[in-house]
Length: 164
Image 1: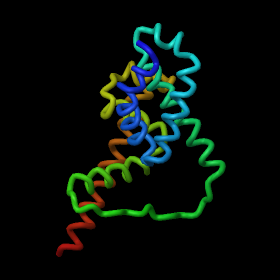
Image 2 (image 1 turned 120 degrees about the vertical axis):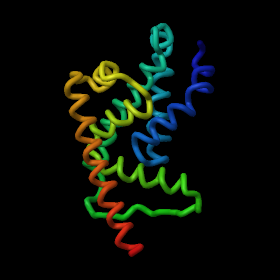
Image 3 (image 1 turned 180 degrees about the vertical axis):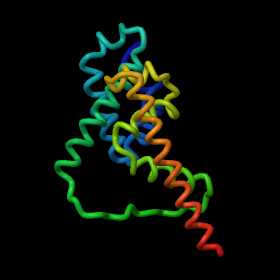
């Protein structure tokens, strides 16, 4: 498969994956562009692999993890509330709320959850993507799901109090 064909077919999927991973559209665009630029330079080797898309997705995860480190070092530390632009659609509001919950997770937990529930990978595949062992993957996902459950429970209690 030629690189232009790969990009035409897989860029939308990579953008969705990166957007869920980063919780920021602008960062996902930069991330995917950087990764595809590096993949183009190595496309002869990548295209010969059994799973070129899995390799490029791993490049996205690695780039995301390194971007998080760079952003942490260069970003101001002030607490800034994310701007919420309501569009009136319940689905969009639920998705935005989930992205905010995911954004609150530590980066490795978020990566593990996104790879499991968004990309549909097994523990073994996630461990290979993140460069860790399978028990670590299960632990990261377990902790992330517990954090998400606690967040959902407190949000539900807060919503109940507001309507009472």
